[in-house]
Image (cartoon, rainbow, N blue to C red; front, side):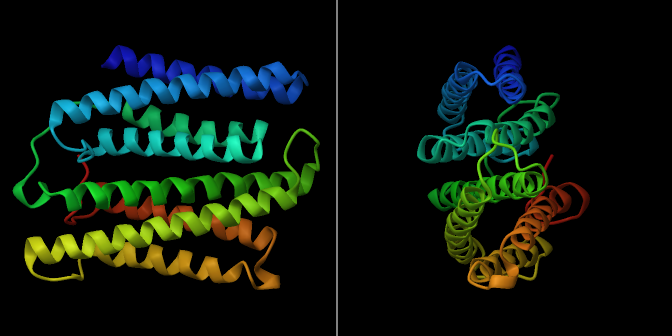
Amino acid sequence: MKVLLSLLFAIYLAAVLGYLVRLAWDRPWLGRLALGLVMGGVILQTGLLGWRWWQAGYLPVSNLFSTLFFFSWALELIYLYFELRYRIGATGLFVMLLNLVLLAGALPREAQISPLIPSLDTPLFTLHILFSFAGYAFFAMAFSIGALYLVQSRLQTRHLPDKLLLRRINEESIFLGFGLFSLCMIAGSYWAYVAWGYWFSWNIKSVWSFLVWIFYAGMCHAKFVRRWQGSVYAWLSIAGFAVVLFTYLGIGLLLQSNHPLE
């Protein structure tokens, strides 16, 4: 497993280098090569996730290693969706750098699979996790695109997509992420009711998840307000992802909650 994970990291690192060289040396084949490496990495990562799922008998996303690995996988799939739809090219550099950070955090950690506690052994757990990290990945994409929008506002380079396209991708990422995170909240609430008899608790994880939902609900509205568009919306995308990271990592690692990360 560690050898394959190191190979996966090397593939994604090669893709990042390909995008970097593509920015400096305008050769279309470099972009195609980098995209091919991303696709190869996604295939390998999907195979590893499927193998771990088969070994565990459940979606193995219950500790820090597995959540970072799953987050990385979801982010790569979402990047491919936007690349194949919009041909965003060198924009992949920003997304891939974030993906490398996620994998770098997972590599040193143990990849063991632990049995689920009874309250988690339900299809609602799988739905909750799938919707949650799919939403997180779209928010991560919006963060990357928001940062790129600010860079493009200063550089105005032809190597990057124009600001209108970046704004469209950012808004679409927020909208899709909000929809999936809403489904995560619904599945989580029903799961809590089935497992513990209540729909919502004032546990710190639940409260911050609700704050994430409120923040991105506001962003879905802000896209229609002229003064919130452009650079302000890009900064909001960056700030929103900071809230997501605190909800995902900060609470799980630093505070006591019903969603601990080990």
